[in-house]
Length: 620
Image (cartoon, rainbow, N blue to C red; front, side, top):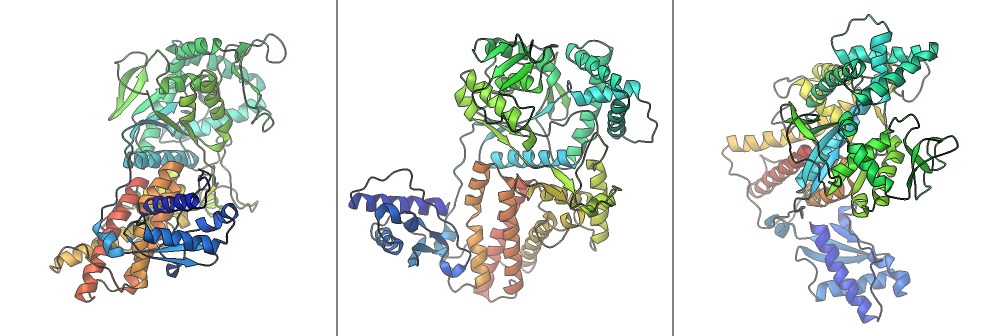
């Protein structure tokens, strides 16, 4: 990582300058380097001199000159830096010796194997999955790949809420709401049924009592209603897994909420919580009879009517809230309960918690990451606070909530799906209760058709694989907090920031290297010197050098979109290089460098695509 090496050098010289001036160096000094937008401003640059102007009471340009002298004279700067310049009002610009850079191996400092449990997807098992669920899964799977890439031991959980209101509603619908309509999948049938039962609740309020009966039965187990719920949930979970498999998304363990309750995990958590002064049963008021967890923070108190400073974990009727079960689950994730599940094989490579089964080693995480949309920020904060209240502060600090924005449909996508767009909105939200949205299987089929129509050469990847990759990339490329307005045409563009564009760039590099091999051109060698290079070559080189730093930022911030941004710019720079710099028809010296650059690009874009979960095709 060049930037980290340069930062350490600047830090050394800055400390030396502070010492000379009789000042104490503090950790408040934040040194950073970045690649300037314009090549003429250097390969790396820092504004540290401007940051220090008030502290040192000197002009930034003077401080920059003093630091430049130290960097050059004390030899602390990495030998990769061939030249240092100072530019107004106080930038320190550094130029890299790319010949030396090419001779070195740069390896990202990897984790020593700490265990991370990542929970993602966790779709209510009551109907087919939609594109909003898929964004969760794509983000989670990209984080799995990213953390494995940097050396973590990653375990992937899919939490199945088989005791919740949504499943109860579907069971109520199956038993009480007639529906006759052609469907090829059970989840699609339940999609329409779930919408219908919510309409029935409005027209027939007493039907809501059936939901309460089903919820009680699901928690108790071993009776008619609970078995119906189990059968519905398992069938739909299998369909969800099939849908995710099409996008290369897999799991290690299914954790069923019913096992958390029935196998006594909540009971163990309940015993721990009762030992604290923060957990008690209300004896009066509107929460009389409820077990509540008194929170230490009022951060969410006024943000939503449902957010109370005292969080209900057990309702007065004995039904557990989602947060109660989640607290028990997280205590187990960190290995803090003197209790474990039994496990059964569910499908190829996948295990499931079960009331009967075998012992195994799951959980016991060093860090836990939950991919859940922004609407679950409050419950996630409650779990973290519960850990802290119980004295597990270290584990609370290692619990990370990766929050993300919801997915809606562009007017064009909504119209394609038969949704009424006469309101002229900029985007159309989805609602499972109203039956509005795009099912994953339906979306994949539509995208496959678009890809098929756009392709002239169909000898490479199948249109379905390209469609899945295009959808996946589109859902990953936006900042996590951004609402994604999904547009099918944009997602399948062969130019611009799309997965199709990146895969084409990879295939182009493979084709160039294959042609060179066919023409008996020797394998690209590492150049001894890199001088007098074209602007497009320089820009590509500089961006290739930033890959390790990008990986570091992406995994520390848990942001797959950082990798997307890097990969898109890399593909663009390579295509610019390809257009302006002849490769196979270049002079021998130029050909050697350019083939080597092509190979470096191919290996780097392949690494990035793999982290994002996209194919690395030889041809499209």
